[in-house]
Length: 325
Image (cartoon, rainbow, N blue to C red; front, side, top):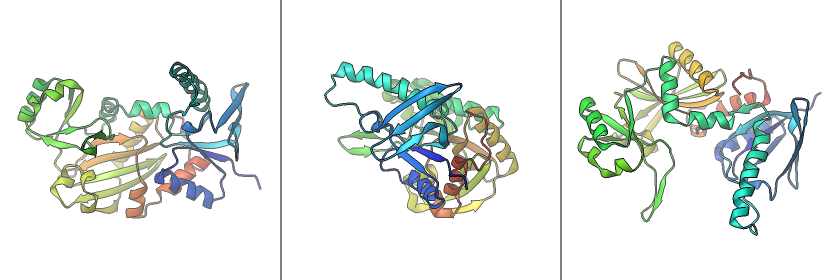
Protein backbone atom coordinates (compact mmCIF):
# COMPACT_ATOMS: atom_id res chain seq x y z
CA UNK A 1 0.00 0.00 0.00
CA UNK A 2 1.36 3.43 -0.94
CA UNK A 3 1.92 5.71 2.06
CA UNK A 4 -0.39 8.71 2.26
CA UNK A 5 1.13 12.04 1.27
CA UNK A 6 1.35 14.72 3.92
CA UNK A 7 -0.90 17.72 4.53
CA UNK A 8 0.67 21.00 5.66
CA UNK A 9 -1.51 23.07 8.01
CA UNK A 10 -0.39 26.67 8.57
CA UNK A 11 -2.04 28.27 11.58
CA UNK A 12 -1.44 29.48 15.11
CA UNK A 13 -1.48 27.27 18.18
CA UNK A 14 -5.11 27.91 19.19
CA UNK A 15 -7.31 27.39 16.16
CA UNK A 16 -10.38 25.22 16.86
CA UNK A 17 -11.46 25.39 13.22
CA UNK A 18 -8.16 23.91 12.03
CA UNK A 19 -8.43 21.34 14.81
CA UNK A 20 -11.53 19.86 13.12
CA UNK A 21 -9.60 19.24 9.90
CA UNK A 22 -6.52 17.91 11.68
CA UNK A 23 -8.68 15.52 13.70
CA UNK A 24 -10.35 14.24 10.53
CA UNK A 25 -6.98 13.74 8.82
CA UNK A 26 -5.64 11.96 11.90
CA UNK A 27 -8.68 9.69 11.85
CA UNK A 28 -7.78 8.79 8.27
CA UNK A 29 -4.12 8.26 9.26
CA UNK A 30 -2.98 11.00 6.89
CA UNK A 31 0.36 12.56 8.00
CA UNK A 32 -0.14 16.16 9.13
CA UNK A 33 2.63 18.74 9.55
CA UNK A 34 1.14 21.62 11.52
CA UNK A 35 3.14 24.74 12.19
CA UNK A 36 2.87 28.50 12.48
CA UNK A 37 4.75 30.96 10.31
CA UNK A 38 5.79 32.52 13.62
CA UNK A 39 7.86 29.37 14.31
CA UNK A 40 10.30 30.42 11.57
CA UNK A 41 13.23 30.76 12.02
CA UNK A 42 13.63 30.06 15.75
CA UNK A 43 11.94 26.64 15.94
CA UNK A 44 11.22 25.91 12.28
CA UNK A 45 13.87 25.70 9.59
CA UNK A 46 13.57 25.38 5.83
CA UNK A 47 15.80 24.46 2.93
CA UNK A 48 15.02 23.70 -0.70
CA UNK A 49 16.74 23.50 -4.07
CA UNK A 50 15.17 24.16 -7.43
CA UNK A 51 15.29 20.93 -9.42
CA UNK A 52 13.84 21.42 -12.87
CA UNK A 53 10.58 23.23 -12.20
CA UNK A 54 10.12 21.90 -8.65
CA UNK A 55 11.43 23.08 -5.30
CA UNK A 56 12.69 19.98 -3.47
CA UNK A 57 13.52 20.32 0.20
CA UNK A 58 12.21 20.16 3.72
CA UNK A 59 10.59 22.00 6.59
CA UNK A 60 12.01 20.83 9.89
CA UNK A 61 11.19 21.18 13.56
CA UNK A 62 12.92 19.44 16.46
CA UNK A 63 10.33 16.64 16.23
CA UNK A 64 9.23 16.41 12.62
CA UNK A 65 10.29 16.78 8.98
CA UNK A 66 8.14 17.55 5.94
CA UNK A 67 9.32 16.86 2.40
CA UNK A 68 8.04 19.68 0.23
CA UNK A 69 7.75 17.46 -2.83
CA UNK A 70 5.52 15.06 -0.89
CA UNK A 71 2.76 17.53 0.00
CA UNK A 72 -0.79 16.57 -0.96
CA UNK A 73 -2.34 19.88 0.12
CA UNK A 74 -1.70 23.04 2.13
CA UNK A 75 -4.38 24.44 4.42
CA UNK A 76 -3.80 28.14 5.06
CA UNK A 77 -5.75 29.16 8.14
CA UNK A 78 -4.53 31.82 10.56
CA UNK A 79 -0.72 31.86 10.78
CA UNK A 80 0.90 34.69 12.72
CA UNK A 81 3.91 36.90 12.04
CA UNK A 82 7.54 35.84 12.22
CA UNK A 83 9.06 35.88 15.70
CA UNK A 84 12.69 36.85 15.23
CA UNK A 85 15.62 36.48 17.59
CA UNK A 86 15.19 38.85 20.58
CA UNK A 87 18.83 39.99 20.47
CA UNK A 88 18.45 41.50 17.00
CA UNK A 89 18.28 45.28 16.72
CA UNK A 90 15.18 46.90 15.27
CA UNK A 91 16.84 47.60 11.88
CA UNK A 92 18.05 43.99 11.79
CA UNK A 93 14.57 42.71 12.62
CA UNK A 94 13.00 44.78 9.84
CA UNK A 95 15.53 43.45 7.31
CA UNK A 96 15.28 39.86 8.57
CA UNK A 97 11.47 39.96 8.47
CA UNK A 98 11.60 41.09 4.84
CA UNK A 99 14.04 38.30 4.02
CA UNK A 100 11.82 35.76 5.78
CA UNK A 101 8.68 36.95 4.00
CA UNK A 102 10.20 36.90 0.54
CA UNK A 103 12.34 33.80 1.08
CA UNK A 104 10.45 31.48 3.40
CA UNK A 105 7.08 32.86 2.34
CA UNK A 106 8.09 32.76 -1.28
CA UNK A 107 9.18 29.14 -1.00
CA UNK A 108 5.84 28.11 0.45
CA UNK A 109 4.00 30.17 -2.17
CA UNK A 110 5.76 28.13 -4.87
CA UNK A 111 4.54 24.81 -3.44
CA UNK A 112 1.08 23.51 -4.36
CA UNK A 113 -1.80 22.76 -4.11
CA UNK A 114 -3.18 25.34 -1.69
CA UNK A 115 -6.59 25.65 -0.05
CA UNK A 116 -6.62 28.67 -0.52
CA UNK A 117 -3.41 30.26 -1.78
CA UNK A 118 -2.61 33.22 0.53
CA UNK A 119 -2.18 35.57 -2.42
CA UNK A 120 -5.71 34.77 -3.60
CA UNK A 121 -6.99 35.16 -0.04
CA UNK A 122 -5.39 38.59 0.14
CA UNK A 123 -7.03 39.70 -3.11
CA UNK A 124 -10.46 38.31 -2.24
CA UNK A 125 -10.45 40.02 1.17
CA UNK A 126 -10.81 43.38 -0.57
CA UNK A 127 -14.56 43.97 -0.37
CA UNK A 128 -14.69 46.24 -3.46
CA UNK A 129 -12.96 43.47 -5.45
CA UNK A 130 -15.28 40.67 -4.38
CA UNK A 131 -18.46 42.75 -4.71
CA UNK A 132 -17.55 43.74 -8.26
CA UNK A 133 -16.66 40.12 -9.06
CA UNK A 134 -19.98 38.90 -7.64
CA UNK A 135 -21.89 41.39 -9.76
CA UNK A 136 -19.90 40.37 -12.85
CA UNK A 137 -20.88 36.75 -12.18
CA UNK A 138 -24.57 37.60 -12.11
CA UNK A 139 -25.19 37.60 -8.36
CA UNK A 140 -27.46 40.29 -6.99
CA UNK A 141 -25.44 42.78 -4.93
CA UNK A 142 -27.22 45.54 -2.98
CA UNK A 143 -26.26 49.09 -3.95
CA UNK A 144 -22.99 49.86 -2.21
CA UNK A 145 -20.97 53.01 -1.53
CA UNK A 146 -17.41 53.23 -0.25
CA UNK A 147 -16.34 56.70 0.80
CA UNK A 148 -14.76 58.90 3.44
CA UNK A 149 -16.90 61.88 2.39
CA UNK A 150 -19.68 62.51 4.98
CA UNK A 151 -21.73 64.50 2.46
CA UNK A 152 -21.66 61.70 -0.08
CA UNK A 153 -22.62 59.20 2.62
CA UNK A 154 -25.54 61.37 3.71
CA UNK A 155 -26.83 61.72 0.16
CA UNK A 156 -26.65 57.96 -0.29
CA UNK A 157 -28.71 57.35 2.86
CA UNK A 158 -31.23 60.05 2.01
CA UNK A 159 -31.76 58.54 -1.44
CA UNK A 160 -32.14 54.91 -0.34
CA UNK A 161 -33.75 55.29 3.08
CA UNK A 162 -32.62 52.08 4.79
CA UNK A 163 -28.85 51.71 4.72
CA UNK A 164 -26.35 49.78 6.82
CA UNK A 165 -22.77 50.72 7.60
CA UNK A 166 -20.41 47.77 7.34
CA UNK A 167 -16.78 47.31 8.37
CA UNK A 168 -14.27 46.14 5.81
CA UNK A 169 -12.74 43.74 8.34
CA UNK A 170 -13.96 41.59 11.21
CA UNK A 171 -11.07 42.72 13.38
CA UNK A 172 -12.08 44.46 16.56
CA UNK A 173 -10.87 47.57 18.35
CA UNK A 174 -9.14 47.59 21.72
CA UNK A 175 -9.43 50.69 23.90
CA UNK A 176 -10.05 51.69 27.50
CA UNK A 177 -13.50 50.09 27.31
CA UNK A 178 -12.09 46.72 26.26
CA UNK A 179 -12.26 44.80 22.99
CA UNK A 180 -15.13 45.66 20.68
CA UNK A 181 -16.09 44.22 17.29
CA UNK A 182 -17.62 46.61 14.75
CA UNK A 183 -20.82 45.04 13.45
CA UNK A 184 -23.08 46.03 10.58
CA UNK A 185 -25.64 48.57 11.76
CA UNK A 186 -28.36 50.70 10.26
CA UNK A 187 -27.47 54.37 9.96
CA UNK A 188 -29.46 57.55 9.55
CA UNK A 189 -28.62 60.53 7.39
CA UNK A 190 -27.88 62.56 10.53
CA UNK A 191 -25.30 60.01 11.67
CA UNK A 192 -23.47 60.48 8.40
CA UNK A 193 -22.51 64.00 9.49
CA UNK A 194 -20.08 62.40 11.93
CA UNK A 195 -16.63 63.87 11.29
CA UNK A 196 -15.13 60.44 11.97
CA UNK A 197 -16.34 59.32 8.53
CA UNK A 198 -13.74 61.61 6.99
CA UNK A 199 -10.91 59.94 8.90
CA UNK A 200 -10.96 56.61 7.06
CA UNK A 201 -12.85 54.66 4.41
CA UNK A 202 -16.36 53.41 5.16
CA UNK A 203 -18.78 51.11 3.37
CA UNK A 204 -22.51 51.76 3.15
CA UNK A 205 -24.96 49.30 1.62
CA UNK A 206 -28.64 49.35 0.84
CA UNK A 207 -30.61 47.33 3.38
CA UNK A 208 -31.75 44.03 1.88
CA UNK A 209 -35.17 42.86 3.15
CA UNK A 210 -34.70 39.56 4.98
CA UNK A 211 -36.79 36.44 5.21
CA UNK A 212 -33.68 34.64 6.43
CA UNK A 213 -29.93 34.55 5.82
CA UNK A 214 -27.67 31.83 4.45
CA UNK A 215 -24.10 30.91 5.28
CA UNK A 216 -22.93 29.00 2.23
CA UNK A 217 -19.66 27.10 2.68
CA UNK A 218 -18.06 25.86 -0.53
CA UNK A 219 -15.19 23.38 -0.82
CA UNK A 220 -14.23 22.85 -4.46
CA UNK A 221 -17.55 21.63 -5.92
CA UNK A 222 -19.25 20.76 -2.61
CA UNK A 223 -21.89 23.24 -1.40
CA UNK A 224 -23.05 23.36 2.24
CA UNK A 225 -25.91 25.81 2.73
CA UNK A 226 -27.16 26.65 6.23
CA UNK A 227 -30.31 28.73 6.65
CA UNK A 228 -30.00 31.15 9.58
CA UNK A 229 -33.13 32.54 11.23
CA UNK A 230 -32.76 35.33 13.79
CA UNK A 231 -35.17 35.83 16.68
CA UNK A 232 -34.08 39.29 17.89
CA UNK A 233 -33.87 42.69 16.22
CA UNK A 234 -30.13 42.91 16.84
CA UNK A 235 -29.51 39.51 15.27
CA UNK A 236 -31.66 40.44 12.26
CA UNK A 237 -29.44 43.47 11.71
CA UNK A 238 -26.22 41.43 12.14
CA UNK A 239 -26.54 37.84 13.31
CA UNK A 240 -23.03 37.89 14.82
CA UNK A 241 -24.33 40.10 17.63
CA UNK A 242 -26.52 37.40 19.20
CA UNK A 243 -25.67 33.78 18.41
CA UNK A 244 -28.10 32.59 21.10
CA UNK A 245 -30.97 34.05 19.05
CA UNK A 246 -30.16 32.02 15.94
CA UNK A 247 -31.61 28.78 14.62
CA UNK A 248 -30.15 26.75 11.77
CA UNK A 249 -31.41 24.36 9.13
CA UNK A 250 -29.88 22.67 6.10
CA UNK A 251 -31.21 23.85 2.74
CA UNK A 252 -30.43 23.21 -0.91
CA UNK A 253 -28.50 25.80 -2.90
CA UNK A 254 -30.59 26.88 -5.91
CA UNK A 255 -28.95 26.00 -9.21
CA UNK A 256 -28.79 29.62 -10.34
CA UNK A 257 -26.92 30.56 -7.15
CA UNK A 258 -24.66 27.52 -7.35
CA UNK A 259 -23.51 28.26 -10.91
CA UNK A 260 -22.88 31.94 -10.18
CA UNK A 261 -21.01 31.21 -6.96
CA UNK A 262 -18.88 28.70 -8.82
CA UNK A 263 -18.06 31.40 -11.38
CA UNK A 264 -17.27 33.86 -8.58
CA UNK A 265 -14.84 31.50 -6.85
CA UNK A 266 -13.22 30.69 -10.19
CA UNK A 267 -12.79 34.40 -10.87
CA UNK A 268 -11.26 35.00 -7.44
CA UNK A 269 -9.04 31.91 -7.68
CA UNK A 270 -10.56 30.25 -4.62
CA UNK A 271 -11.24 26.60 -3.79
CA UNK A 272 -12.89 27.43 -0.47
CA UNK A 273 -15.26 30.21 0.47
CA UNK A 274 -17.64 31.09 3.30
CA UNK A 275 -20.32 33.22 1.66
CA UNK A 276 -23.16 35.18 3.23
CA UNK A 277 -26.48 35.80 1.53
CA UNK A 278 -29.77 37.46 2.43
CA UNK A 279 -32.90 35.77 1.09
CA UNK A 280 -35.77 38.21 0.62
CA UNK A 281 -39.45 37.40 1.21
CA UNK A 282 -39.85 37.04 -2.56
CA UNK A 283 -37.01 34.45 -2.63
CA UNK A 284 -34.32 36.66 -4.17
CA UNK A 285 -30.78 35.84 -2.97
CA UNK A 286 -28.60 38.92 -2.35
CA UNK A 287 -24.85 38.47 -2.03
CA UNK A 288 -23.27 40.15 0.99
CA UNK A 289 -19.71 38.87 1.13
CA UNK A 290 -17.29 36.01 0.59
CA UNK A 291 -14.77 35.24 3.31
CA UNK A 292 -11.91 33.32 1.66
CA UNK A 293 -10.68 32.10 5.04
CA UNK A 294 -13.91 32.09 7.03
CA UNK A 295 -15.11 30.17 10.06
CA UNK A 296 -17.27 27.11 9.46
CA UNK A 297 -16.82 24.79 12.47
CA UNK A 298 -19.85 26.13 14.31
CA UNK A 299 -21.98 25.54 11.22
CA UNK A 300 -20.91 21.90 11.18
CA UNK A 301 -21.72 21.64 14.90
CA UNK A 302 -25.18 23.17 14.41
CA UNK A 303 -26.18 21.31 11.24
CA UNK A 304 -24.08 18.16 11.06
CA UNK A 305 -22.96 18.98 7.53
CA UNK A 306 -19.58 17.23 6.88
CA UNK A 307 -17.50 20.31 6.07
CA UNK A 308 -14.35 19.05 7.81
CA UNK A 309 -14.55 15.82 5.81
CA UNK A 310 -14.89 17.78 2.56
CA UNK A 311 -11.82 19.86 3.45
CA UNK A 312 -9.88 16.71 4.35
CA UNK A 313 -10.85 15.16 1.00
CA UNK A 314 -9.68 18.27 -0.82
CA UNK A 315 -6.37 18.39 1.07
CA UNK A 316 -5.76 14.70 0.41
CA UNK A 317 -6.38 15.29 -3.28
CA UNK A 318 -9.51 13.12 -3.37
CA UNK A 319 -11.56 15.94 -4.84
CA UNK A 320 -10.95 17.67 -8.12
CA UNK A 321 -8.01 20.03 -7.72
CA UNK A 322 -9.15 23.02 -9.69
CA UNK A 323 -6.58 25.08 -11.57
CA UNK A 324 -6.98 28.34 -9.65
CA UNK A 325 -3.54 28.70 -8.09
